[in-house]
Length: 108
Image 1 (spheres, rainbow, N blue to C red):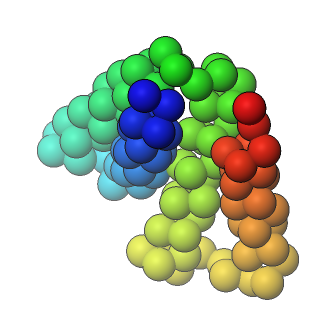
Image 2: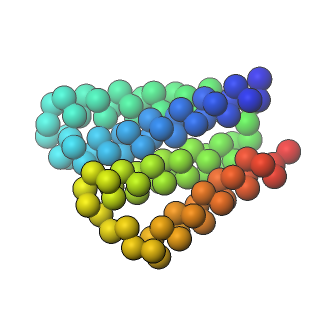
């Protein structure tokens, strides 16, 4: 059951990335379809985190969820919006990934 919860958590993190990018495309919820897509992704992401926390420790699940969302959002910001890909930013992303992996691999 726990492996299933980790899979759900990863999907929730992908939806978090999606809703973060959706916030940009919705332009402050002033564009109808991007706003609808963003709200759907928010609901799916939060709902899936709720399901995952039935089996996973809350603190770990939250940190992993936000880590996936953060890394995904920064990566898409670089790819879609031309945000900086400076080595220092990429190094910081590496630290987030290390922390997420550490929580997954070293937790009981």
